[in-house]
Amino acid sequence: MKAFVMKEIGRVGFLEKPVPELGPGDALVRTTRALICTSDTHTVKGGIGPRQDLTLGHEAVGVVEAVGDLVRDFRPGDRVLVGAITPDWGDPASQNGFPSQSGAPLGGFKFANLKDGVFAEYFHVNEADANLARIPDGISDEAAVYCADMLSTGFMGAENGNIPMGGTVAVLAQGPVGLMVTAGARLLGAGLVIGIESVPGRQKLARMYGADEIVDFTKEDVVERVLELTDGQGVDTAVEALGAETTFQTCVKVTKPGGTISNTGYFGEGEFVGIPRVEWGVGMADKTITTGLCPGGRLRMERLLRILAAKRLDPTRMTTHEFRFDEMERAFEVADKKLEDVVKVLIAF
Image (cartoon, one colour):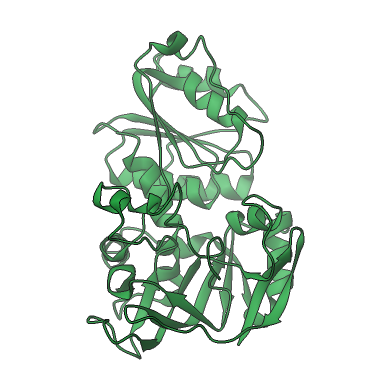
């Protein structure tokens, strides 16, 4: 089969690979649609260390091609969504309520990390009954594929933010994850959502997904403006959706005492992330910092698909570019270099 791989740090391309073999509880999925994630570009730049000929990608939907003998709930021909995170559900971390960390910190992150990812004609899914979700007939592949990571991660950022009904929220960066944090905050009942973003196209999407106010960090001081919008109090919840130390520190600064800083960002550089000491109340301001890795699993995916089925959200408005799988090298370049005002790149197989 044809696969798009990280040949080594800094180099990508196509490679012929054997179709994955199945264990008794596994499934083989024929890919129909996939999305390129910024995490894929971080991986190629060495974010998780050296990899050789590793198939990239972790956001995909497809059709079940084959299943192992012990799979009960899925059959060949089923149209399915697969979460970006495919935990080992019997692991102690999973049993303790943290399946994304099964096996090791971030251990549920298998695709394009611990094993080949989804940018191939077929891909392997472990523990199929727990990690696949059937896509309802009324939902397109183009919409369902967003549930794999963008909705799950973005909504996690809002959920981990402990947003009170009618509460105030600042979402720092309105890329695809930040946009879904914004949408999730509104779904959870936030009364004021402030989006921090400088790119006009992303500002427009942020308003469409529920931002009440936009703060452009290139034109005004973010901390001053957020405090002004909250009558000097700061927000109940600040969500870091970029993965930069500066934005994380701004989150701490704009959060009121007793509030929550929810981190969804991928910090791929440096040994430490600094916390502004004074605004943290020298460690005693009751500001909670929460973190998490995209939740996976069948139940999570079914819930997200239900939101799409109820037409509470249309994630396809984030799709700015579409390419065929054989155009993957150009597609990856557009995503990596942030060309042509890209937000999200959809791949058709």
